[in-house]
Length: 90
Image (tube, rainbow, N blue to C red):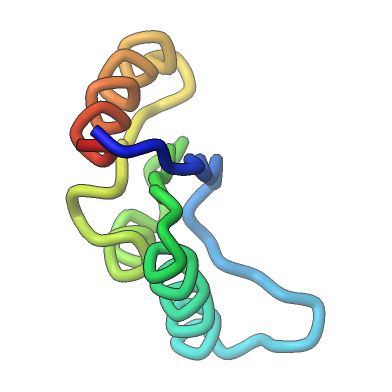
């Protein structure tokens, strides 16, 4: 196992920016930023809370890079996230 820096993104699943409103652009911009971090050796995972934005998060982080949960199930989702961290870092 190699040492890597882990970035965990906690989100509601709706990308936003102060100077852009196009949803497709926002998703692509976030996807590129995630790809750039991974290419620099960072492990990047996402914990998405709520029922909105599942597809956008999966396009940004990849299906395996996202843990979806409702706020009332956060504790169990954190266990899943820890398992994802172990997989991502191997």
